[in-house]
Length: 321
Image (cartoon, rainbow, N blue to C red; front, side, top):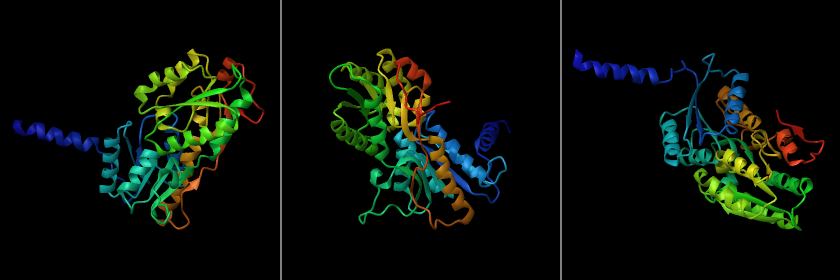
């Protein structure tokens, strides 16, 4: 009996670690590409929308299997492959990498994306220019970046003759590279000098940020980039030490220390995707569903950051809590 004891204990341990299955209830596979305090708000919004529509883990009316790839691409692929093999009722994908991976791995399981750009920006359209038939959720285009970036010259005076704004971007992320090109064109129109440096991983954030700060920039623009999200505290620390204010297009980053933003509310982004997912779980049909633009954007500012840099904020901006 003793020689079988380790096997018995292993079996008990494996059983204990498995999530209890909901009897005859739907299973949602939630895929997060990386760990981030701002991005995590989307998951909260998504689950709150499900709960409001009668799909609650507490009431055992739904099972939400959550996995986070921690920024590792092979792990992300394994997570999506696992959910596909388990034939979950739907996939919820947070940030671009999760959404693109899911599209690549399944053509049948409905995918409800959030914190992701349009299918066109993700480069997942087919030869006829159509988005995947199983792709839904809430998406964002780059038009709002124009407003976000244009705020800076209105609020900040240049140290020299011309305003100099710095940014970093990830060449491997389509929406990040697209955003950089769009901002570059906008900077030219606004008579602003843009200095953009590539960043391939959050591990390089401090080195690249310091290199950017060494070019005597007036402000830093935090664009919609997963690497920027993951390394924001490092960027913020270095910018604050150099007395360089950060502006952004993401409301969540204002809560974390950026001066101001005009952008999507991450919680509401997830909530909007969750409402679509709830509709599907109720009807088991995707009729009328499609990737839709984020509905709620906010003009927000950080009172502490505004005070530090002595910036006057327009009355149509609200303070973050």
